[in-house]
Amino acid sequence: MSRIATVGIVMIMMITSLAGCTGISNGIIGSSGDEEISVPEWELGDNWLYTFSTPDYSDDTTKLVVATTDIEENGTAYMLAISSIGEARRHAVLNHNPFLGRITHDDLSPFENGMSQTVLDFPLSRNKAWSFSLFGNDWNAIVTSVDSSIASIRATANDGSSIDYIFDGNIAFFSSFIWTDSEGVIQLKMKNADNGVGHTGDVYFVRGGDLYSNNWYNTGPDAEFVDTFFVSDHPRDGEWNEMIYFLDASCGGGSTISLTLRDHTSVSALERLWGPGAEETGTLGTIPYPSEEYTLTATFTGNTHLRILLAGGITYSWNL
Image 1 (cartoon, rainbow, N blue to C red):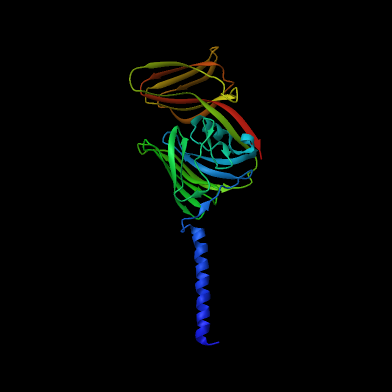
Image 2 (cartoon, one colour; image 1 turned 45 degrees about the vertical axis):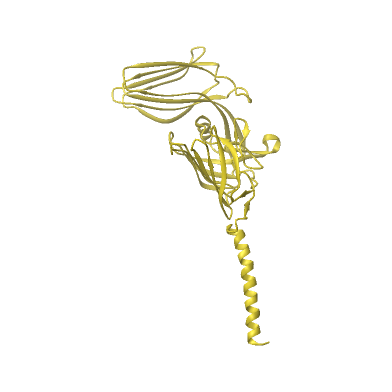
């Protein structure tokens, strides 16, 4: 065989090889625009560590854990729980994590107001669009890019709010999820810090329901505020196990706050007093066995601030 022929054969082989590599590369990095990301299958004990940030509450870090895979919704949903009972209660009263509780197998959809919401619509492909409801708003979502196993998604609402989130197939869940309101204020920032498999130990989910909330600023004369509220059962799961409270309080010099919560028999369920210069932030606590009607009394002297949230809670636990 001549040298020229040999070179020609080598060049043909190189061109064929490069063409094959180009096709594979397009499939890996998604530059062809045709790549799709399929829904992952979660296993018992899969877990993700997230940092949650909101404008009103200090940051908290929570490990989300797959507690069940084939029980919820007649075997069509996972149960996503938390590794700490304290964090489970915190999320129940603050209600800022939509991805706790039931998550569907087919689209990893969370539930809001008893209905699954298609935050993700698998398979994910570039320019795919759909709609869903979350945070009390209606959203139109579109996949803006797919790069290997990572999809970037943007959802917008008519009021100008937006959600920007990234699904990372390498961890089988979100790497980030950011909700920004119509004023440009970030209402929720959810960032992944770590992930793993095979979590062992107790995990918890507290099904919460808002019961009462108020936020007082007093800069004038002494004041007293009295309010009553009724504690009814959870509409589907019956009686609450406990009432969960979350409060912030601060007093200027020479100022005081007193807080009393009594049940319908006038038994004190919660009593707190803050003196001059006192400050307390992000306190979480529980009141056992909620009854039907409560009366809340708050008194203020001087320059003061008090915020309180109350939620009913039903606790579920699993040992993995």
